[in-house]
Image (cartoon, rainbow, N blue to C red; front, side):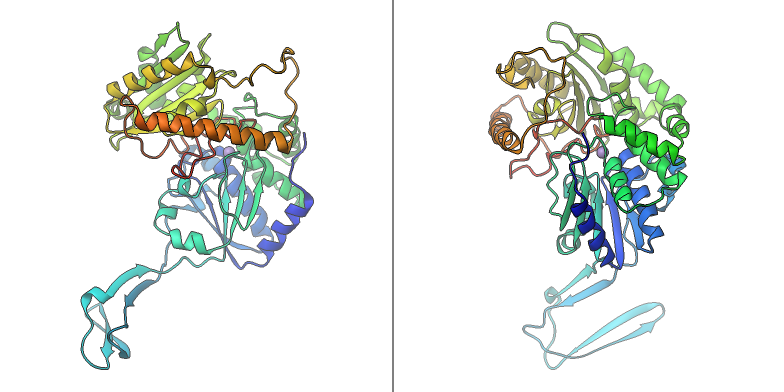
Length: 466
Ligand SMILES: [Mn+2]
């Protein structure tokens, strides 16, 4: 099925961009191939149209994306921000402001008409970054932007946002929202926009978009993959996109560190065949001794653990170095990973979700989580299959939902989510939960076709993503 975005929407986006002089592009922390690929591609497209733009991401871009070029231009911090000295003049009137520089020290001199300023009336702040449009890519919630958002909330709240994403849970308050939850990747939305602009894709942009599609569809394996994904990939290859280069860089660069970590994970795999759960834990010591990172653990989950036959729930729990235990979950098609993650304050998509626990050791966390999952696996609420209404065998793909059906489903799911959350809040066996497994589960998740499970209740705005 073709994109649900219309030319009218692309036209408004084009018009919005054309009215702006300096554009900031930003994607979620712990960036994946879709985040980087779609951002770099859109940067190339807009730059060729004479736009001035800068790219940002709170976390470093993994070296495996260097081949898309341009990832070198992605900055982790806003620079050249003004320093603002704020003085409350309610009680004391300012006569004049002057400055002098003595021995490399700037003295800002504020002279009152009479009396003196109290130190409490003086505060320091940074000025706002100098951009008149923010383009957010692949990011369903502002908080997932990480530090760049946390430290500049006012800027994000007072600047126009163009929100380009494919997560069904997207709650970004965009001036314009180019959100298509049917699209398996943000890259495909950027491709649609390029097509609308009749932009002749150069090879490097095509490769960046191919990276986005290949990574977010799990090399076309996820159920989110559509006929359009293949058609778009074909167009991108015709434009010079180098699929082999993408595969080579994304999948065939296993470092010795990665393999060592996988060895440890595989040696620690545990299986509960009665409930259909397979899991492994990874300690900080495992990461330190193998020199591998959390992404390696996540790939091990996707590529190895999730494929154990008869598995309903596959999970990796790992210590994240900040005294937290993060969990990544994958489920077989009949079960909802995001419903399970919601038990622990997390969220995500049906096949892939994540959560973060604080205040527990790795062992305590895994015991607590497993107990809870076992309890609930027997409970039909984790299953995706709608209550027996249609009994025809599922040889044919499900029909797309009508807007009415979607609204109805959202309502039901929100009720369930609230119930699940209150369970989680009150149960003694569930530890304190903070934040979520932001993008850890994103890289190979299939964000589409998932019912909007993670439409966050107001109390929990961050639970929107995996
Ligand atoms: Mn994505």
